[in-house]
Amino acid sequence: MNILGIETSCDETAAAVVKDGTKILANVVASSAEMHAVTGGIIPENAARQQIKSIIPVISSTLEKAKIKKEEIDAIAVTYGPGLIGSLLVGIETAKTLSILWHKPIIPVNHLSAHIYANWLNTEKPPRFPALALVVSGGHTDLVIMKSHEQLNWIGGTKDDAAGEAFDKTARLLGLPYPGGPEISAQAEKYISENPDIKMSFFPRPIIHEKNYDWSFSGLKTAVLNEVKNKKLNKEEKQKIAAEVQEAIVDVLIKKTLRALVEYKPKSVLLAGGVAANTRLKNKFKSAINKNFPNIELFVPSPELCTDNAAYIASHSFYHNNPVPWQDINADPQLTITSEF
Ligand code: KG4
Ligand code: ZN
Image (cartoon, rainbow, N blue to C red):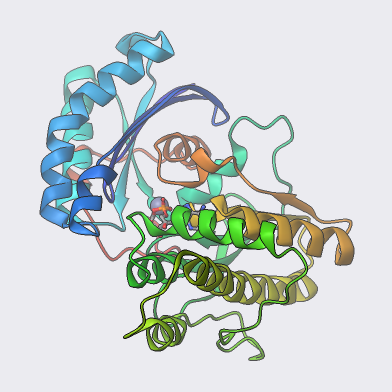
C-alpha cells in the first residue's frame, strides 16, 4: 500500500511516499529555516506564506522521486495538529483538494503520535510491544506507553517549556543562529571533545528526584539567562554553557525515562522528535540502557527522520488506517498526544 504523506505543522513543507508503513520511496522536506534565521525564530505568518509557495512543488517532486503515478497512490495522510494554524491549513486544504481530484481516501494524522513512527521506517526489525516512547520536539516533551498500535497511554510530560524550546532559547541567549538545537549540540560536542573527562553539573536538573514522569525546563532557561546576562562571553565560554545546558537536559530526560523502564518493563524504548537527533542524548541513552537494561532494545531514528518530515506521517496512517470524509477534517492546533481523531 502506497501512502502519500503531507506535513506542514510548523515551518517545514514536507511530502513523502511510504510503502506498507515502512519503506520510504521518497521523502522531500523544504525548510524555511534560513528565512527564520533572519528573524531569530519562526514568525507564523511568514512560515505559512512560504508553505503556500512550496507545497505543490514539494508534492510534485516527491511523486517524481518515488517514480510513482497518482494512480498508484492508495491514500493521502495529512497532519491535522498540533501546530501553527496557518501552516496546518496549507497541508490540510492541499490534501483535501488532492483527495477530491484523485478520488483517494484521506487520513488525518496526529503529528505527535506520528513522530514515534520514524522508528518503523527503513528498519528490518520493527519495535516490539509494549514499547516506551519518549517524544522530544520543539513544542512537546512526552512519555508514552504503547501496548499496541491502538493502545497509547500518556504517562508524563513537561509542565512548562519543551526540551527543544530549552535548546532553542539557550541558543538565542548565547547569540547562536536559529535553529538552536543543532547549534547547541555542535558547540557542546566541541567542548566535550576538548574536555573529555570534565564533569558537567553547573545547571540545575529540575524536578529530577520527583517520583513522576514529568519534566520542567523553564527554570533552566532562567538559570542560563542569569548566567549570561550582562556578560560578554568568548567562544570557549559559550561552548561550555552549551555543553552544560545540554547535559542538564539530557540527564533529566534519561533519569525519568529509566524510571519508567523499571515500572513498565517494555520490550523497546523509542526516541522520537527533533531533539532525538541530539548525539549526546542518543549516546548517553545507549550506554544507560546497555548497562542497566540489556534486554530492552533502544530505537533511535536517523537524524533526518527525527526532525519534521512526512514519512512518519505516512507510516502512522498505515498502522491507523482510518480514512474520514474530507468535510470532517479540521486543523487542531492544540492537539495532544492522546487525543486521537
Ligand atoms: O520535531 P521537530 O523537528 O519539530 C517539532 O515538532 O517541534 O523538533 C524541533 C526541535 C527544535 O527545538 C530543534 O532545536 C530541536 O528539535 N533539535 C535538536 C537537534 N536537532 C533538532 N535539539 C538538540 N540537538 C539536535 N541535534
Ligand atoms: Zn515535530
